Amino acid sequence: MYDHPGEQSAADPIRLLAVRDTPLSLDEVFAAVGDPAAGGTALFVGTVRDHDGGADVNALGYSAHPSAEAELRRVAEKVAADFPVRAMAAVHRVGELAVGDLAVVVAVSCPHRAEAFAACRRLIDDLKHEVPIWKHQRFSDGTEEWVGAC
Image (cartoon, rainbow, N blue to C red; front, side):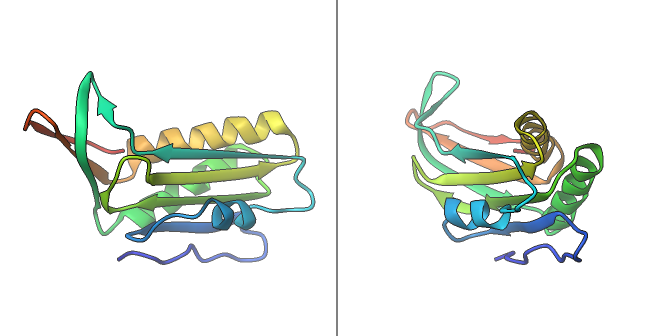
């Protein structure tokens, strides 16, 4: 669907950004942030769980605005400007997902672990709050809900 890895220059630490409708790969994201000057790499993996708010989840789908990748780049650039990022990657899934499927994978490598953890946390938090990707959950009791940015 929207599988366009971020463009990069030699000085650009953003190695991979994508919103895609195919299964995500931990290996792909981890490999994208490899850097010999990085002493720490933090990786976050968001998976589809079988419940939310005390209700059993039957089905879940993500959809994205066409600007999602541009907004993802904007978020990543802000994080890279605030931390000593050597390399960064973020991939979010859209479409119908099953319990246990990978929904989002982000990774950041920095000179030290504390910086990598902080930058990775900021990247996933800002992605969830600022990138126009919406979650549609359907519950076993027949109810459903849309969740704003995720």
